[in-house]
Amino acid sequence: MASRVRGRAGIRSTGVGARGSDGGVVVDGGLVRRLVDAQFPEWAGLPLRGVAEAGSDHVIFRLGGELSVRLPRHVDAVGQVAKEREWLPRLAPELPLAVPVPVAVGEPGFGYPWEWGVSRWLDGEVATVEGVGASTGEAVRLAEFLGALQGCSYAGYEGAAGTGGETLAGRDAETRSGISALDEVFDGVAMTELWDAALGAPGWGRPPVWFHGDFHTGNLLTLGGRIGAVIDFGGLGVGDPACDLTIAFTLMSAGSRAAFRATLGVDDATWTRGRGWALTTGLNAYTHYAAVNPRVAAQTTRQITEALIG
Image (cartoon, rainbow, N blue to C red):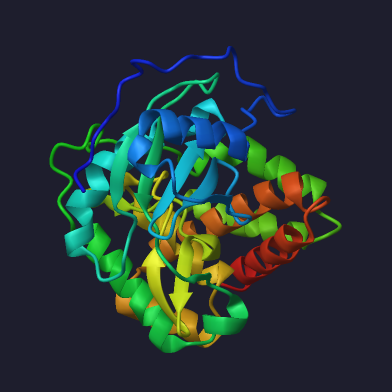
């Protein structure tokens, strides 16, 4: 099915959408049902059910057996739909693992204010440390995926000559605040030493390459004990790929991590920056979610601890 955008003709808005306590938009099944039925009547008869493991940027629903509906929760995630629609079809043929294939883009309606996307559903279970973390074979598969992604052309990508978004330096104040706040939970001295090393490491110093931007266990799907798909390319960008090394500390053991690094050919400076990314993102998630989400607390504790080990 070709990608397409439906206009808002004939769609009646019911007013401003409800806002969550964090300023995001509250999206429920009733709203999504109305949006789908009004804009894509050919799918009106398909069952719709929420996906419990959706991330913080999007609400995800499964539509029938072959489609997923993904709606931004807040304004910072809005541009991700258009980016994925433009670039995933170009990148997918070059990648060794499955990625979402956009099939349609919906428009605002019924109080929901932003574009939203429909993609092909990808079967699988979220990757876990227990399931694949110790596997050198799966670590090599992930390294090969990142290598293939980095080798794809970004001709025409807006901002390709830039850094592709966030930098470690831009997270300095936030990270040091997190280190101070969690000094009694983790080793504050070790965290400070790692962070200083990451900030002081030489930069990429090569032509920019693609990075996934949110490469962690929640965005990897397994089938039959093997990683088969990578999802959620909202953080896709071009620049320094060190941020994608976070997966080595969220998922892998010492042995599989070594195989991952060797396969990808990561130099010392890039590896140190990658450890810095694992530290800063782990601190951010722990600070905001650990008190209310035991799963996030366990995952980020492991991420920070493994980043300190290296």
